[in-house]
Length: 448
Image (cartoon, rainbow, N blue to C red; front, side):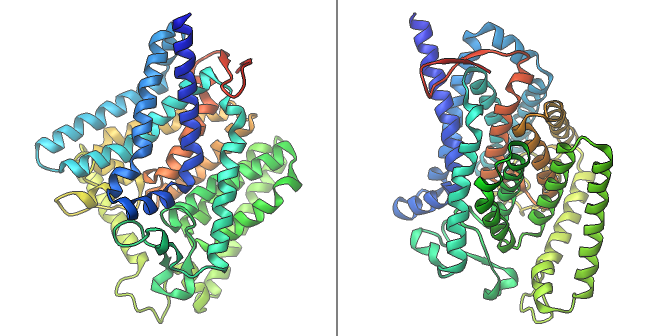
């Protein structure tokens, strides 16, 4: 009896912990900046979710240890095995890089955090979903915080001064209160409660796709129309070109998955291709227009910036590809990407998450990560009739396209939310069977 009570307590802790992270991630940058401005220790405050994930991982390990059937399904799953090997590779190569003085401790720890936190959280969410009905509440966990983010963002865009966030601790020691296209105040980029406009744009890829998925699958058109219009408006004002592309790809994939008729699918693909061509032609014809130049090229003929963001991005991608090809074993976690800004050596920011992984853990590490991605896609595709799985599959492809041009998975908000939801969605498939679980929200028992 004591053992059952203990397991129930740990399951409840695990479930509430996962839900807390999913709900708070869209606003955590805002509150951590405010807390750091009052109490200092910005880095310590903003790792609250990693510390919580570490505690949850211990709880998940304890549940696996106590449940032999669950342990067998978990350990024998090929995706889980590859993730564990990838984690060990990251840890091992990191220690080697540290021993060779290729990375300092600060950069190494930060590199491990941003590379591994979402995969660990994915595994934690798997275990939580095997024991509870948390997946049934995914829409509330996702859409209520999104409504707050979009609502505040639109107020920020139309009513508040650009530097409003400086009153809540944003500044040189925490996060920038605002960013602008080519340093022009006429093109302030919306960031809402996230840490910047690009992270907000990638986050909205998931939200837009999820909302459309609910609309087409569950016919809740009127209920979410107001939020969808706000999402599109907020997405536009991020001026995040990679996010725009990601949303377009996600929506096309979503519609393709939803429709079973092959002729209609062909129409969707042809119409999408035609839209791309027409949009490209329109941008080319209007390329001398200042507004078009700033929105689509992030510069114009009157630019005062010494180097354009486009040149920086192209140069970073070129250098990242060169490093990946010339150093097949990588230099270790923390030597590339955002973490490398903390290193004693020159930072290497490739503007591509995949190139970052290649720079850090080489061809083997990059291959393992790609295989993890492929397994997840296959699992989601097999259960695409489920609304959440269909949404995650479509948004994953869109975010993956964005990852070619940015470090999307290095951002804590989108990485933890997406992979956390993926853990909830894939638990039945990965753990092989339906399992009876406790509903921590009520006292009844349900079946997954």
